[in-house]
View 1 (cartoon, one colour):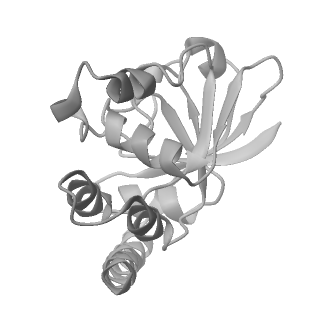
View 2 (cartoon, helix red, strand yellow):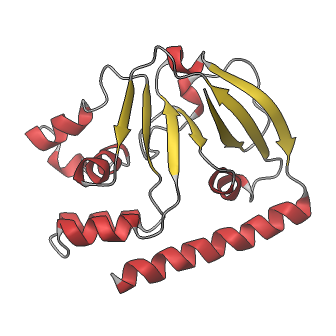
Length: 190
């Protein structure tokens, strides 16, 4: 059992589902949970009625794909964020299109906002794979757990729902801006 956190733009109604997430998140569509509170909070702090959920995730009986920082991690993110569409139909594209097949959960590091720029630079040959990985991983945002099947979603129990108040949201927005600026500066340094 893991204690995790989910930031939501509004109240979660009904049962949890893989359709909660957008398709172009780091690891595709699924229910995303962070290992600490800061990342989910900074994602939703600019919304009108954001909520922070504390959840318990029972991982027993689930097939878990753990993705460490490396080229598989970078290429999975590139695939799910639609940065590999220009090579659709190639063996490399197909590898990552099916990389998580048969798994219920993906556990991997969170990519920072600078990833679009760095992935584009990698694909156009401006930077090497080593530079790409350093740029994407330089700001350690922690790990995320993504329930990508309904079986996994059914094993998540919401323990607490907490609304974010205005002053808290404003402080988190400042923190979010500072983290983005830090990520850009670190990637530029790499």
